[in-house]
Image 1 (cartoon, rainbow over the protein chains, first blue to last red):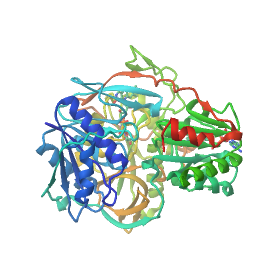
Image 2 (tube, rainbow over the protein chains, first blue to last red; image 1 turned 30 degrees about the horizontal axis):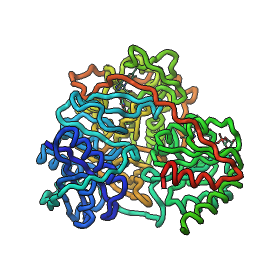
Image 3 (cartoon, chains in turn yellow, green; image 1 turned 180 degrees about the horizontal axis):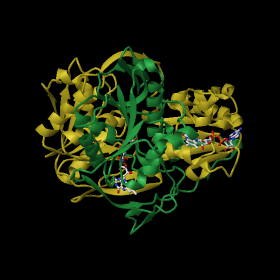
Image 4 (cartoon, rainbow over the protein chains, first blue to last red; image 1 turned 135 degrees about the vertical axis):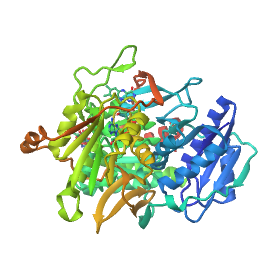
Length: 323
Length: 249
Ligand SMILES: Cc1cc2nc3c(=O)[nH]c(=O)nc-3n(C[C@H](O)[C@H](O)[C@H](O)COP(=O)(O)OP(=O)(O)OC[C@H]3O[C@@H](n4cnc5c(N)ncnc54)[C@H](O)[C@@H]3O)c2cc1C
Ligand SMILES: Cc1cc2nc3c(=O)[nH]c(=O)nc-3n(C[C@H](O)[C@H](O)[C@H](O)COP(=O)(O)OP(=O)(O)OC[C@H]3O[C@@H](n4cnc5c(N)ncnc54)[C@H](O)[C@@H]3O)c2cc1C
């Protein structure tokens, strides 16, 4: 028996998200009295793989194969399922990010395993197996029992601290090959912008609303995001107006995100906006209207004019960074 | 070519959710039910593809697993422009069950493109689309932000870290769609509403499928700690608090 975890890599490197997942999986393994096994897919060198051991993985299985350069839902699923069977996984942990959303549901059918997605805590109990997850876009939570022998959990981003618990580790190169018949999607073009952070994976997000007043006022906001290594985002009216690109819009009809820190600048906090960001760990609101609903969702707030406050924040951040 | 759009019937987002029966059940009194917003956009995209005759889309069908009480939502999809509908007559209590019921129907009804939303706004599972693809043993692409047909080939783009990827995928396939797939949801015109009354809804009785998960009870979120205010004149202090108190960077 084991807890299997799939920490994704980005161009051969793991991120905090990967370590969060492994930390979580190893705690679940501890609750069950079994080992945590990590499976990595793609080209990741041994040094990078061994980092996973620091977070409690006791076995790392690496599937490295030239035909696995980009995500193919079907091929990746069948590889993870093979590994899950070979290590007799009773729990499989993935992230509730784009990749996890692509793979976890397919795995559920392949392994006849019940799934709970967007789980934000350790299991409430392991027998019966009950987890706590967000429902109604954060307006409520549910205790969900997974009734099948194998269980799949997708972990909400930024909901679990990265915890070090180094274990002696064995790194195994797996000879598993993807079934070429399953590799049916073909990537024909990749457009990357350097420095652009995937909004749904970002740790910190700096977001602006109609209170930014015009497309010309985003300089300091973008600069602040740059200093923080943050992604930029916006409310829907802002992307509708064309002040910012459509892929930055968060909310019910935009991106659903769960960063560690979300700055809502000149955003009123409409329910449709909150539906996309309420899982953020910390929300900072900057708004001229002290009664704006966003302050009810925020932990930190400044009542005032964003065009005056942003330059001050930028200045302070520069100072902090230069130290 | 035939397109299927799977739709979830959800409380309008502005609903204040409440639970009854020891917090075990959603209190549905007064709830306004709507097509899940992503599914509305998926339907819009399907209809846009059909509008351009060169794409060769013959029909757009919507499918819902749910009881007869969901028919107004299905009719709304028909009013927006879907040609016909499928309803599997069972309580949709678990994503696996929903996907399994849909897969059963798709053994006899065949579609080339199946669209699902990235998430249903009620249970936030993000799972039905992928599950359905695995049941059908067909490819899936997730987080799809555009879908076009070019010379009979489907060209899809999805977001990745730092940008976008374009891919082609052979039919049949499941596309799980997100923001970008269509700009604005199409709304029903008077003519559409009239026409919807007579469009067919094929009702299937459910298979015996055991649910894999069960909601034991619901909880309301703990109230967040009251907002801590920083004086606008001293805005820089916010950075100190975030760094030293919240420790977020
Ligand atoms: C079906 C549906 C779906 C929707 N989906 C989404 C969605 O996904 N995402 C989304 O964001 N919205 C969505 N909306 C729209 C939503 O209801 C709100 O209209 C929208 O979020 C408001 O955007 P905003 O906060 O930028 O603008 P406003 O509500 O206009 O708020 C602007 C705020 O800026 C403040 N302000 C003004 N000047 C300044 C200044 N100088 N400095 C600081 N603050 C200032 C104001 O006090 C105000 O609070 C949806 C609506 C519907 C009906
Ligand atoms: C009164 C009521 C009570 C409910 N109680 C429960 C409950 O206790 N537990 C529970 O898990 N669910 C319950 N549901 C069902 C719930 O509405 C969801 O449809 C279902 O759980 C799938 O949610 P998900 O978040 O996993 O879907 P997701 O996987 O997030 O949905 C993604 C996409 O799958 C498709 N899809 C989702 N649901 C359906 C459907 N029913 N028919 C066709 N396509 C669909 C849509 O394209 C959707 O965009 C209840 C529904 C109602 C009306």
